[in-house]
Every structure is written in structure tokens, then in C-alpha cells.
Image (cartoon, rainbow, N blue to C red; front, side, top):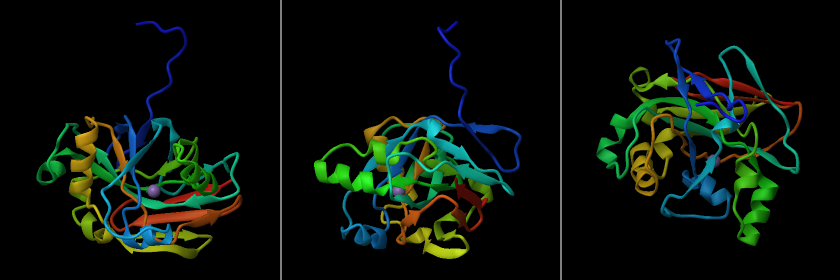
Length: 231
Ligand code: MN
């Protein structure tokens, strides 16, 4: 097939221990999936999980030993960090039961769900979509994907974000309100999931603003850490 212009390149994320890249299909994100974060956003309790999306090319791949550069986005005065565990699917499906979810997981990565918080608050107030606050360019920094077999204890891992060396967010993956398998069950009831889908599983408490010149270091036990500079 020839095209009327050159198609965009496939977005891919490197995989630990492999020369092969993980080709990204879609990016799904879970909202308010840690209780203490739900509370800091003015909510409480276990509500049904809800989802939003980012475009695949919002990915900003950050390789080990390198500092990723995230341009400070336009139209905001409140760019917030949200560290999240990212689940990478190796196999798609619909109506996947939680008990079978592990069969669909390729691996895990550290991600940042960067958010224009002021615009998100405005859109919430107006009852409008969140896209402008969540799905902007470079809004999805991500580190290398570690295959699931090499990260056996992910459900009990610690998740930690520092800004300029100061701790901002620290929690445990075990505190997810909806765990990884349950998220996959709910998501796959709404969409047919595909190989290459990434799921940002939600952020713990401690979200706050960063400004140009700040350096974010994000880590999850057993996974490749990332450092991202806001430029
Ligand atoms: Mn988030």
C-alpha cells in the first residue's frame, strides 16, 4: 500500500534483556486507583474503576542512564507528576476474567502520567472531556519494559518518585484499589484489548507541580527507573 504521505513511525518501548522493541498500540489510564490519592483529589471510597486514554505517540521513552527531556507543555500553569506502574499487554482479548489476566501481560514499566492539573480541574467543573489535561504531547514518559517473568514480585513492589532529590510520592503497588487483574477485567469489558496496549494503573498520593528545570526520578522495585527533566 502506498500512502498520500509517509505514515508516522511505530511507537515502541525497549525491553530489558532483548534487542526487540515493544510496539505500542493504545495507552489506557486508570483514574483514582489509590485511596490516599482519591482523598487528596476530594473523593473517597472504592468507586467502580474509570478510564481515560492518551495517544500512543504521547510516549516519551527514557532509557537507563539517560535523562529524558519533557518540554513544559503550553496552556498550563500547573503541570503535575503522577508516578504509575505501567502494565504492557502481550496478548489482547475481550471480557478477560481477572483469574486469566496474567496470561495477557507481557511485562511492566515505570511511567509518569503527566497532567495539566489546572485544565483538568476546569474540565471537571465544566463537565467536559479530560483530553487536553491528560493526552498532550510527551505526557506519557516511560522506562524500559521488564518482562513479567523477570519481575515476579510486582504486586508487592514499592513505588517512589523524587523531584530534585526530594521525595514526593511513595507507596506500595499492593495499595491499588483495583489490582492489575481487576483492571484488565474491567478494561476488557469496555474495549477489545490488543497486543501492544499499555495500561497506566493509577498514581498514589503526593501529586504536585513541577516547573521547568525540575528533575523527576521515578522507580518501582524490580523495574528500570527513569529520570525526566522538565525543560
Ligand atoms: Mn494517573
